[in-house]
Image 1: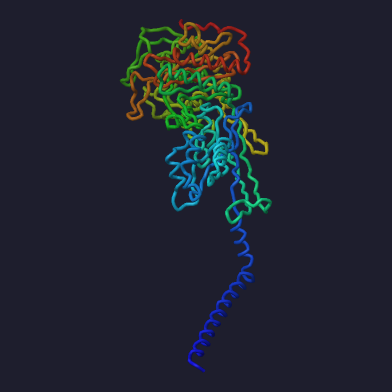
Image 2 (image 1 turned 90 degrees about the vertical axis):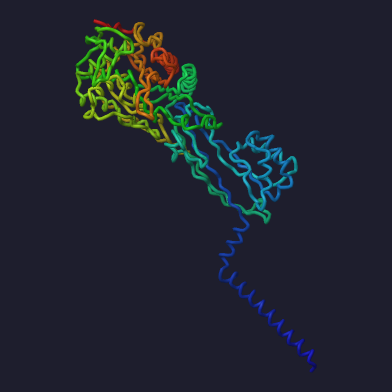
Length: 582
């Protein structure tokens, strides 16, 4: 046999051996796939031919007391693209998106996204209302352009814009509540996302009529607040006007139903709009009504007088000799007007807002007794309104008071409070001596419609009914023609009130800033059968602003609206005549 034939046979054997070996490997592998790991590989094959998408659960609504939506969720879309498909037509797509979505789109930045190298996926714009996004997608389709896709989202919207923004709060990019009711009731409002798994073609398109698996989403529950939307809207506007006209740094307005301690209106200016992002800086998004502390000034005189009346130490006609001035611990103290020795009744001290008269009256109480009453009225502790970030305020322990502390705290300096604490405390006087915790939410529940009522806690008595009535008569003298706030009077209604003007404290130094004040007015009506209490605070207004001249007119307008809105009948009698001098 020739040498050539031998070599050919050898090559043939080698090739045959290689072929047999290759088929052997394939055979073994096939046996492994089909016999040993059949189920695992079948699952992988299904997975490779399926796609899974999230079905977002809408966040629950926040409602006013009448069921009107204050915050709700709407359908939205996030637009995405496959740059491999959009790179060549990026300018055309970017132009359409700019036309349909407006300022949300930067034309040149969008072109860069559509041309992202080495990528098959890129986000173009997130959280677009569905009806707006669909217009853009239709325009792209009509232009015979491809490569732009969408993902379902739910968007948070606030139909009232700035309305009650600091009470409602807002959500962050992850959909979590950041402040206010949105944060406090985040678990209730947050739903459970569902999912949809379906078969797709090799090109990624969904196969019609093919098998699919759906896990239903569970919407978030709703929260019903105690706020009245119409009253809230009016108060927001009126307060914003007052802040602007008085050149104040900020303003607060809170109205409470004295019978139930439900907050029916809670305004702040300046504020923010979570829908548009306008004004969303820390100084605006903080809820000043429960988080900011300040020295309240003369509105605190009502608490001092209530403590004295409860001990039987003063009545509205109790005579008080008011000196022209006092020096306590080398600290000179006077009234806002110069005078000689005055003969005022206790009601006159409140009506004229005399610091010196209040000090004289308060000297009948020891440090510990006065401190105990202030604690009883809720100072130095949270109000119980159950909102995030609430401050305790600052009330120095009575054991550490100096004579000057005792004197100044009696008229509202040297003590720091929140507006909600003041509302709660004076609300006890309006409620015949019983103090309850203010509330902003009446019920919360699931999407199935079953809501859990949030019961109000029973009130606790802080002073006697007679003591509360005595101080109410004193406060009615404030709104009389010869009082410090006749602008707070409301035709047809008896109105009890108290002005407040306090020096502001510089946070950097802890010292008072002369010429810078916080002015306020606290009042309730009808005084003979109280239904609503409204508190107005204006911080750092123009230099000659006062509680009676600047804050009282705002009180008048908001309280008038509340009485009308809730159909409160006028008083059956005129304000009683209260002697202010003796």
